[in-house]
Image 1 (cartoon, rainbow, N blue to C red):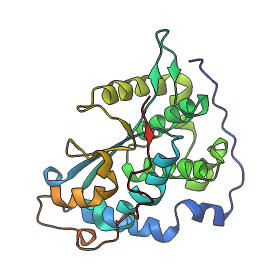
Image 2: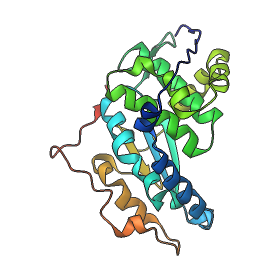
Image 3: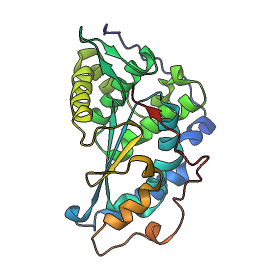
Length: 242
């Protein structure tokens, strides 16, 4: 895959545009949840891994409209969240990448891998990825660079990661991890809770997290139905692996 020079174009982002992605009230709720998480023993936390690809519309919907709820409640306090942007991408014999949704997806997978690396705090890189995936749902993924302005993040670290080739190395590691899943993933989003793949039941990820938690400080979110996802069909909407 040819290396493309990343050109960061920053423009004026209105306050309402910022609010569309990560409102101040949501941010405050999130900060409170993170403070509460400090009193939870790290050994008691539940590992939640989401294997996805940046331009799968069903991955974007899951991240933007459902996964985000762990930050809007106190569930984040018991969760170690990992995002793994590779999904159904394949590596051809000549080592080039074949991304399911084209070259733009290859680029954005690298961008999001760099975001995870350069902003390791989960609330920070999730904020950026949430913005990018929201734009995708609006058919505006090519405007992803506006997310620097709307999230208030400095583009320089991500730009260096992308242009130096580090992002491609990160993606290769994600490729190896995804390929090594047991059982192998059949579609994305592929959600794993404490090494247990939820497969078609991924929409109930919050229930699995609450059941897996063995600590003494049970989140309020585990006592409510705030995470219920209305199924549009008997079969979850996903992007299947080729």
